[in-house]
Length: 120
Image (cartoon, rainbow, N blue to C red; front, side, top):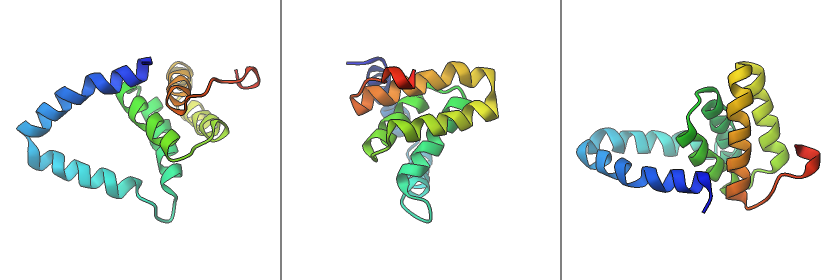
């Protein structure tokens, strides 16, 4: 497995345990999550790209793993991810220059692709 696949797997059990300890709050969060990333005026893929860029700005590796996987699952292309990460870099500067490449690697891990030399 890869680093971000492992990270998502490692979070599964503690998240499940916390969700069991606080079911109403987590149920509400789950409903919010589903509603926020559902197709609407913006397609779900675009919303996942937004969430990935925000995960970079918030410096959250777990969020990067989840939203990189969701972006790949929703059919985001490497070019679309690169554009979204460019906006994260614009808005966050130096820290995004560290977390953006993490998100880039995570996307490629979940999309099962390797970055081309042209995109490095």
